[in-house]
Image (tube, rainbow, N blue to C red):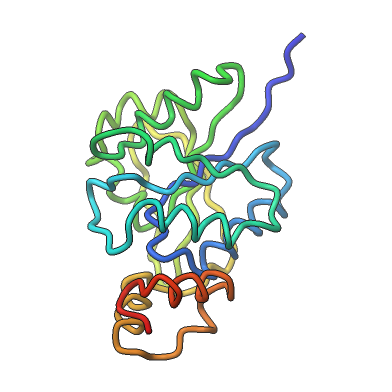
Length: 193
């Protein structure tokens, strides 16, 4: 008899990988709801423009998560073309089809879910765990999507603001894992010196 496991999929640009991402991942682990947590840096995020190369964003995720019990997948980075959640879910689900999959998503992104590529097909393959973002209003009901809401006291950190601060030479040490900040400075990402 095959035991069905619960697998959480957490994708993002992680540009850069910051303490808000780390807080969310630690909170997901603490819930003990999932047998596996897969973190998926986007290769070519079609709804966002990135500043760092995908290889750098993957390296930052690995540094930030080196002490956590997670799997980091480079499937979107290896795949050519835009990174669509539906393609990622199908690729991962093909590896272990018996598992139950949940896509972890911020409440702001969840509101835009109907605009995602092959949205209807995606909602048939995964449930959603909606993480309430700081200052967010009510989570919308998205027709066809099965979802649960998770309130973790998410940190109010904006990757865009961090990139801007780094470009201006401001101190961002309180918002980034130390190894990630060192990597950013070493590689001169986002204009950091």
